[in-house]
Length: 122
Image 1 (cartoon, rainbow, N blue to C red):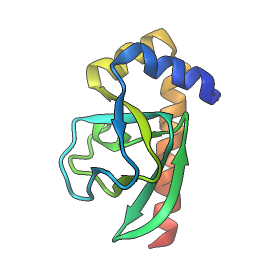
Image 2 (image 1 turned 90 degrees about the vertical axis):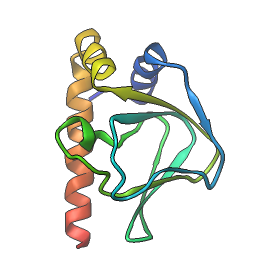
Image 3 (image 1 turned 45 degrees about the horizontal axis):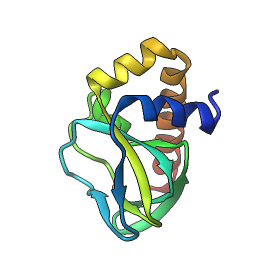
Image 4 (image 1 turned 180 degrees about the vertical axis):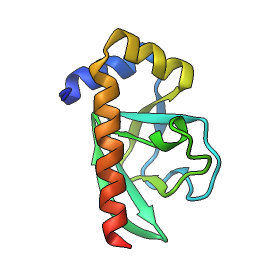
């Protein structure tokens, strides 16, 4: 799989980073979405039903479900620390995959692992 440095390089090529303050909501469970996020710096708390179920960090991706047919967000994402994030819509995601095909495997693996963890919590 890709290491966080390579993943961060892919994100930095795609769009201008967005800064989120600690405690700022990135998206909420049930909200519609059109893009995924990559973490360039910082930590994000993932919450389901208001409970923190995972903390992710630099090099991780999240919100990927909306690029594979899930219409609404299945969890809430809140900045645990100040974060620098890049968002990728479907067009930018496909471009990143064309440049670095292993990125697609990284995203799929990340998505399936998170889904599996969340299913075991229910």
